[in-house]
Length: 94
Image 1 (cartoon, rainbow, N blue to C red):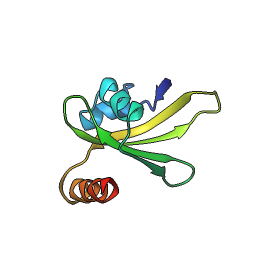
Image 2 (cartoon, rainbow, N blue to C red):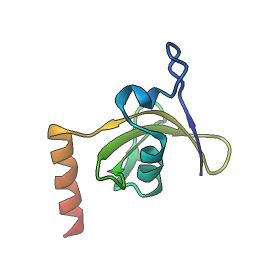
Image 3 (cartoon, rainbow, N blue to C red):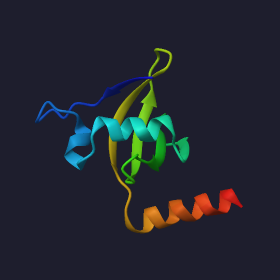
């Protein structure tokens, strides 16, 4: 899968770095999402666990090019959103 990233106009780096997320973690989640659902305005939301054990939410859109996505942002899932995700996963596995 080809992955492109939104560049922060202030720093010129990938926006995900502002949230202390690296490209390998995003790839982990997109390769094996625990949940992938529609977001706003044509975006998609993937939630999953990285190889290191962090839970991330990745916001992306499908590129017109086959097998390609454009990642808008990604950040660690914590607190109530993480609890809700784990609850949904438990319910699905029963």
